[in-house]
Length: 485
Image (cartoon, rainbow, N blue to C red; front, side):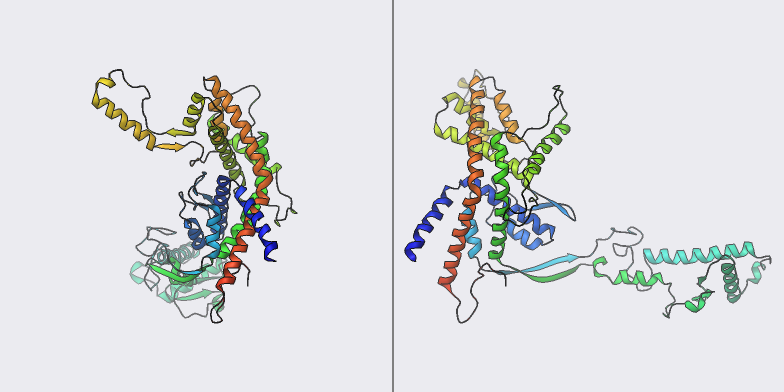
């Protein structure tokens, strides 16, 4: 049996090694970012934070929450895992032991926020901190009761034919309450709260609440708000333990990678065919930046719609991953960059064209004048100054295609800029890059699904062998084996 397994293992290793390293890293990066989006959507911030920091990525892999149900990855580039081996990343995660996070987060509302803010110095929702019903809401409710009573008294004064007694001979409280009750009945008010007697009067007096409290019914709601720990002004914390099982997270990444590979096997064909082009006006009319951006976005969305997965693709769903259109943009950028680098590695380009293509792949944010002054050779200070500027330019170089750029269509704009060069050789180089990019995209599309499955099989085999070698000690359960209990 051992002799039968060795050729299979060699085949898996050969398939995994044939998988382009840059492509594997991008697939891993986007799988991690997609899984973080899923975790954030389910408000599992603990695992999302841990996954975003695992492997020490060169760029932030977290998300920016746009609403309670929508978030956006912080990084849209190619090189978050520029120094990470994609296979080793997953291997380490599969073999890592589970651990426990002690989670502690603050609850409550800051002062001056929420309804009723600014009414008093109570909690953020204006309910006050006193136990007597005072505070923003308490004052409003008391004022409302007083206004209601005074309104009833006003209507009673207008509807009564009797003259009010002189100010010196003010009517007793009982008489005033009876007068208000009669006025309320005349106006169709079933009952009212007698703030003087602290009771309900009128037709519905028998239906008064069973509580012996002198506060109105809505006072119970105010008291409930004051007891809610989430609405308190003082600092309160909730603590709990969260167990993270890295092997389970790796299994989830396997599933996400499989779906994304299925999508890329279709979307890469659009890159090979060169059909990702915005719908431009036929009359050559120039579009403003916003309109052009919208049409470029629509071009990528159109490819995603046309290449939607069927439900029987073996992944159990026909829904696209949430970052699919953005993934297509990054695949186009990666294929363009890898094609240009391949042409430079072949050494078939003329020296001048190769030098300009290499400079085109990098751009400097430093403002350095490329033309030295005529008297620089005679001035040591100027020569040193220019040397320092040149060094600053080299240190500030940025990957033109791999850096963070939220706006889609960067690869198309990069090629169009290369084609607009006055050098005829640069226009020919742009055509060579397009041709090489089509070859790469077609190769990745035809092999990514099978190569990824071979890589997963190899990793799972290694993890299983590691668990069998270690084994449980003294009857204790062994490491997580990738299966749900």
